[in-house]
Amino acid sequence: MAKKEKKQVITINDKQYDVKDLSEEQLMMVNHIHDLDNKLRTAQFNVDQMQGGRNYFMSLLEKTLDE
Image (tube, rainbow, N blue to C red; front, side, top):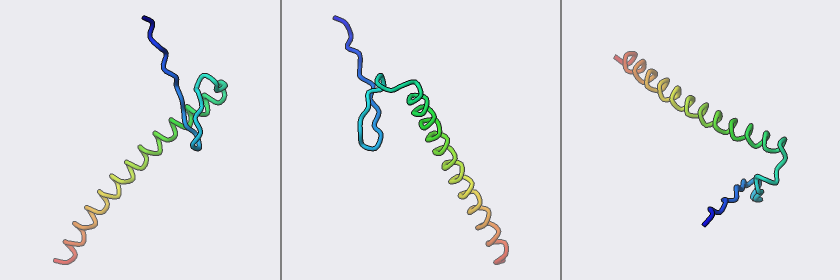
């Protein structure tokens, strides 16, 4: 029994598109968007870490100033 090929679908603005129906240019744009989304998530993660570190050192500084 041959395996059924699973249909690859992407959703854009609540509308589904079959990946095989997209042009090369559209696929390139989808890949760029996917990569940029990953970079934005990584950047937000880094901002969260840096903000947490800044808050920590600010609290240490405030403790020493209060003494």
